Amino acid sequence: MKRRTILEKDILEKANHFFLHTSDEMKKERRVLFNFVSDILIERNKYRGFSFLSREEMKRSEYGKSYGIDNNNENRFENTDQTRVFLF
Image 1 (cartoon, rainbow, N blue to C red):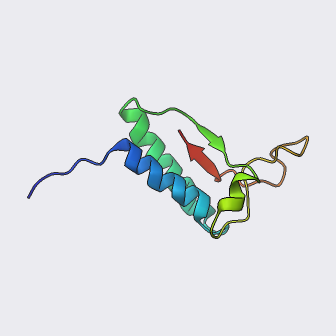
Image 2 (tube, helix red, strand yellow; image 1 turned 90 degrees about the vertical axis):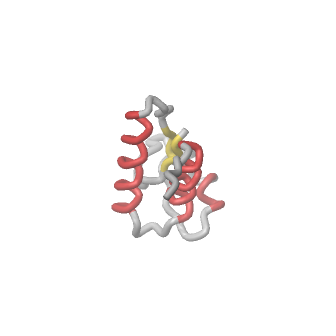
């Protein structure tokens, strides 16, 4: 059986899709995936940070309504979902 290597860009693409498109109730799952993928990237010296998904970016979401940062509010993290992220 041949061994296949998963490319970091493929992992990032799938994880970022999950962070954007999952339902609001899946906070725990998003947190676990974020930690898992971040650890892999850090171990391979490929971690480039993340940003929170804004209200505007979340308009593209299939199922989610929550957002990670509110740029229209003085307190940008009030009533936000810290699991709505985008990994670079």
